[in-house]
Amino acid sequence: MIVSISGLHGTGKSTIGMIIAEKLDLRYYSTGQAFRDLAQEMHMTLSEFTEHVEDNPNIDEQLDNKVIEIAKGNNVLIDSQIGGFLLASIADFKIYLYCPLKVRIRRMAERDNNDYEEKERETLMREKSELERFKRLYNIDLSNLEEIKKVHNIFIDTEFLSIEEVVNQILQKINALS
Image 1 (cartoon, rainbow, N blue to C red):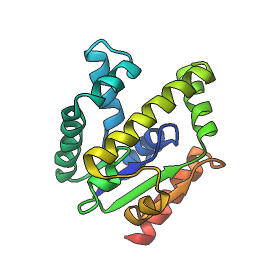
Image 2: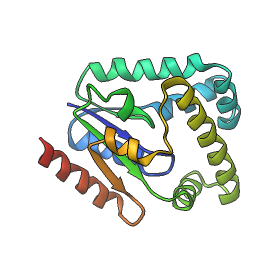
Image 3: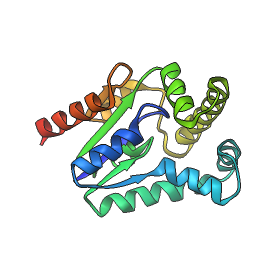
Image 4: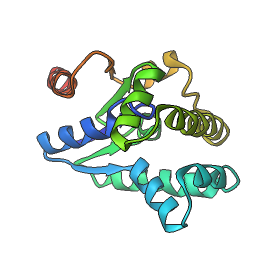
């Protein structure tokens, strides 16, 4: 089974993805973590690395090619903002999580023990960069929910749901679609 879980930062994709992977006995791979690890290896902040990647599209391409290769190995859940698009033809289930910006920033600020305004600046800068890069590299528009809905077969608003409720909804939908 190949599952992709996608969504903007702070929608819960990593937390929920890890739980779903465990419940379905799948390996878990996070491109977000791989991106953060690369930033750390290059001794850059996330903001600095985001700017660096804008001028070096090969980094995105390498990460995304790695996602596709890992998915071809089967029995994996891929946590990636554009995983549903990258794996459209091979993923059995393509999950997309979403919720309002303010909720996402609050969640990330709490998770990272950051100031809300600082996390908002960082998130808006990262998402603007990613939106532009993904359009340029892959013609993927993460601001177009209608296009996102066409690619994903499970689409959940996480704003008012607990982690357990989101996990249960996903598992129910996977069972119904199987």
